[in-house]
Length: 319
Image (tube, rainbow, N blue to C red):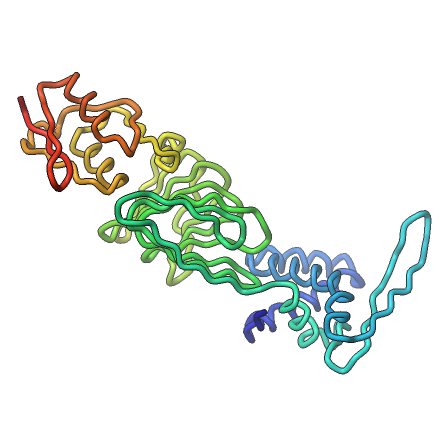
């Protein structure tokens, strides 16, 4: 079990106060409450956790050997109940919500931390602690920390994320870029100081990881390329671009040099072009990532090139 940090405890107590104010205050109070929820994703997560903590309070009390009473009034076929806990260690009235709420929150949720890495010679897929899934290219890695109020991932290399929707925000940091998501399929690639983000479905914000300033909010089917202080948005076939997680490389009229480099990156096996001029040949089609010979046979059938297997991988030359 985990203990909320002082910042988390303070935000939980603030959420409890807002909940009480919204339930028993004026319409102006409820409008202010809605505005507070929209300020930050963490506010929504805190409120969700507060409400779950209130519902879980009787079980939390029983787990600690405390007494709980649940007087219920039946009206028009519906049961209305208000839990009241007795005991020196727990109090959930709004005036003393902070300590009690933190205790219940710690009882209802763990802090999970994971470190996952793909081998150098093949891709890998992992289930994250929150039920999301990540696909990593060879040699890539992620570290995930899921706390009471957020889910934070740090990426090295390239990964595609299929995020489970819930109130806690999900954020992927790669270099100076943070991608904030709430239930989406997207990919992030970090290479040589450059970051590329592709959105397949859902909605994301791309932020500066230091200042929090929003850089871009792409639509599904768009790619954002970030380097230095420049962000470039372009349309992309997201289904084709992310097909690598299914073991397929979809090529749409690209130079042989780029396709060979991408296939080598995804398979972990080098493909060397002995004549730089053949790198300009245009290639298209769908290929199995684990079968470089299929790809090279297709290229050799179209162009005057040949290939051979070497100790290090493959090499392609003009015939």
